[in-house]
Length: 362
Ligand SMILES: Nc1ncnc2c1ncn2[C@@H]1O[C@H](COP(=O)(O)OP(=O)(O)OP(=O)(O)O)[C@@H](O)[C@H]1O
Ligand SMILES: [Mg+2]
Image (tube, rainbow, N blue to C red; front, side):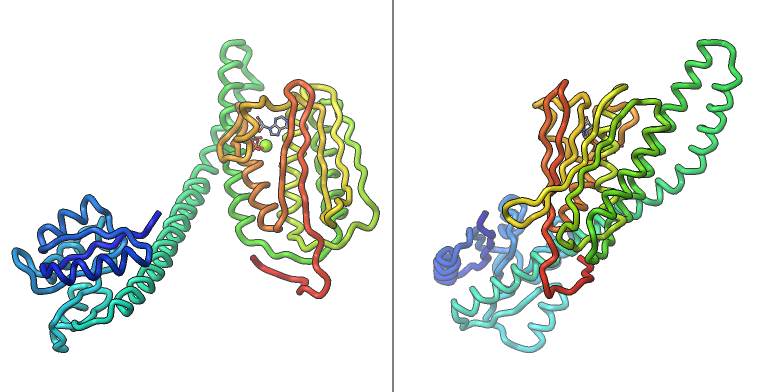
């Protein structure tokens, strides 16, 4: 989409010249001939930048500027004042009211275009910064809520478990069981929030991928033994894989999340295979296959989306986190599945380049 510039000037010649120049260099241009019209046009045209004369009939540039800067919806639109006035006080007044820049007549069209370009670039950076700040604020709020939920959940879960153990009435026992399941669901969500917070800081170091895979497989074997399921976990790792830069904690989380999904997809008996293979393009492939329930075609494209889950106790964040971790490692992840047959997850990682620094914080 072309950036939009609103030109406000009561002088027809200036308006035509500026419009022609800015359109030629690739902007969409809107026009207004006085201050009041400028405010009306701003509300519908949504300009990315306003070039405005100061001395105008109906409402002057200073007043327009004051009104634009006092409203949240228009506050961040950069305004460049263009005027015949070149007195220092006028410039100062313009900046005080909130103008981002000032151009005095006579001006060169080229200079106006260059300033517009530079201000738009700055505005894009500021917008990104504001969004980052918003995300960070939201992140710490979510974190705070998760923290506040932890203690009440321990109490609710603990008491519901006691009720479940001692209750003799079948109906009441069922109710207690339902409370426990809901608590477990929330506990899993909190666990994922913690996990997400942890992966935001990663530090890549050169190492042996087999160590991380073996640690994740060991953990999942222990986990399976407590579930009562009969799952044969086969591990077939390439000896001496090429060194890779990774954050061992985060990469283990990524692999564990995939393995947990495989275990959850197997109802009672099944098999999970974890293998590494060299690819023709020098990358290293980690392939995790299971004989679980598989994923329906309609659902597969959404599995990496947050909160996408088919499980009552699922947070739907496991694969979102895994995807982010693999991306932070410069790798790719792909999933293929056949409902009723099983699922294959392929993670492709790039070997560390020789001579590159061994540590790196993205
Ligand atoms: N190996 C698999 N077999 C079958 N379905 C799978 C497999 N892996 C993922 N899925 C599907 O993708 C969904 C999303 O997986 P994801 O790990 O992101 O969330 P989840 O397991 O539901 O919850 P959690 O955040 O607790 O991991 C799952 O709910 C499931 O429907
Ligand atoms: Mg999962």
